[in-house]
Amino acid sequence: MSYYSKDFILKTDAAKKLYHDYAVKMPIFDYHCHLSEKELLKNEPFTDLAQIWLGGDHYKWRLMRSFGIEEKYITGNAEPKEKFFAYCKALETAFGNPLYHWSQVELEEFFGCTLEINQKNAQAIWDTVNGYIKEHNLRPYDLIKMSNVTCVFTTNEAFDDLTTFPALAEKYPDLKVYPAFRADKMMNIDAPDYLNSLSKIEAIEGKISSLAELEAALERRLLAFIEVGCRASDIAPDKVYPVSTQEEADRVLKKAIAGESIDNADAGVFKGYMTYFLLKLCAKHGISAELHLGATRNNNTVMFRRLGADTGFDAMSQADSTDLMQKLFDRLNTEGHLPKVIVFDLNPKMNTSFVCLMGCFQNEEAKGKIQFGPAWWFNDHQVGIRKMIEDLAALGHLATNVGMLTDSRSFLSYPRHQYFRRILCDYLGTMMENGEITADFELVGKMVQDVCYYNAVSYFNI
Image 1 (cartoon, rainbow, N blue to C red):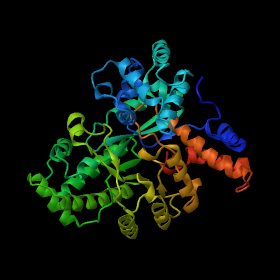
Image 2: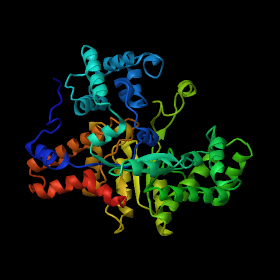
Image 3: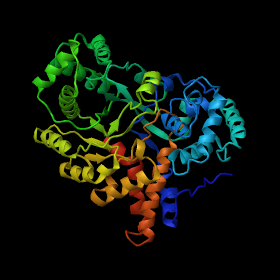
Image 4: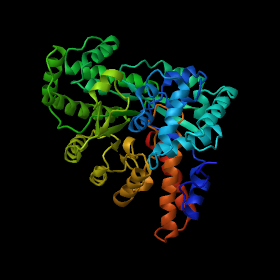
């Protein structure tokens, strides 16, 4: 038997009641993830535990590299069983890392296997879970339904094929799967493959030779996204840049189209304008923006050349976007074009300044119109989640929060929502037992359910 129990993380009787009577039964609304909609539509059976657990999950890959595991057992050509055994070896002493908890919860909640994950149990876990996968002919949709997921926002580039989404609606009428519009590849003008990305938009919308034409093409693509259910746009600059003029941004785009080099100053000019444009576009068409700030990407050049992007070599930026975000939001608000925005803060030292700033732009349009996003990416561990909850509660309004997300490529990642819910209930339950807040379980329990699910339903107009 493992350390995981039904009262995992819940230290008080009040926390246990909040979780078991109110939180655990709530459906999951996953408003930001990287699941493949095409993989969900195909819904092919998984082959083994390594495929379902390790494939595409750079969280796990980073942990294995930190333990000195050779790359062939991570992204290389080692046998699936060898990769799984290597992961067990790295995980068994990863105390404090969220993967230590998540993996154990995934093992027990999805497969009913209560063996503790370590080297000595690796063979038994491998045999037990693979037997379960084969016996139940386990597929992606099965994991979605086991997790009580009702709505998923995938992450799709502006030029992606959207025909999968109507097919998903027909195949799974009880599950809403909508694309989130992402135009980062059109914004990151200093990327080596920028012109290749631009050509993909041109293949759909026609030749683009100016910023005005790019803006028009992106708006048409957003409308196509909205037609298949899109309710949000993901915007992920490394930081907030000053908003330049349309003329300045047009100059930079034409340089790029001409094949000229784009330096950091030019890139900043273009990204600043495009962030402003995309947020204004969200407001115009009534969708929410999910603004992801603070990542430095592809830091290891050797491994980027070997494996490409999104393979576990990103990190946390020290850039402080508070002042420039104030100017950006104030300009949009003054012009009447500030949409609902969820600000994802990758560096927790920005928490309090971000939450304070968000309070300046709230109004009756929505509860928590400007949202402080959940503890994201490098923060979705116990310390990070508790800090996020505490900072929002102290300086904003926790009851308006839209809850957790997975930000994952793995269909096994949904226990991350329950992880968040346990920490939330532990936080509130402790205050109840300390006499710091009301002892009215009906009131506090309703708040828990709102944060877990109903706030997101309302926020995204589902």
